[in-house]
Image (cartoon, rainbow, N blue to C red; front, side, top):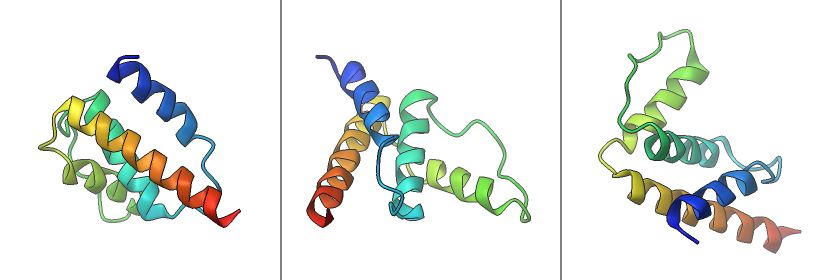
Length: 90
């Protein structure tokens, strides 16, 4: 299985993470996903009153230097960690 296929598999698995997954972890996944699929940030930062979109933009900007492959690997690793943590608490 290639990296892209594994990434897509873990993107699906991320949708089944437990409800108690922290917003911080969700933002990390979001930033890595966007970096892997889109590349560097290509939009301007949302305004001060749009806190949710601004947090997502900041998470994406935080991983801007990573290559697509590096972001995919980090995303897969993070989903695995969250799955293991969820299994340990259930």
